[in-house]
Image (cartoon, rainbow, N blue to C red):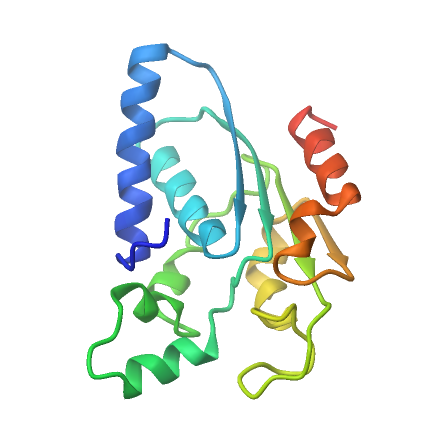
Length: 177
């Protein structure tokens, strides 16, 4: 998914692709599990899909998603001679992030939110981080308010993906539990 495209364009592309798959295979429901920036794109896709009248996304899980953006993206947009388009969407308080929470998922698509907090000292991140994303961004109030469950782990941005409890809870959530 690392293409550099604007995040709303990626969400729209996924929406169109899943619509084509649904038209062909006629599946009734699907689950979405996303890590990091993929969580932002996945939420955008789910919201667009629901606005189009498609209600097949049944469950949603995000892991280490920068819901509140990344401060270093703002620095990159300001200082780089040519900023990667997706960086604009990662700036804290960007238009993309503001509109990402225009519609609620709670009560429609149960969202399980996982975050890590095993960070290290960094010149670009606050003390509480997972080595890539600040805990404050991962636990942004609008995201946690829309989640059915929020869980933190003593894991870094990548190690959280192989945490046994994260895996078990993800499968339990996807099974409806």
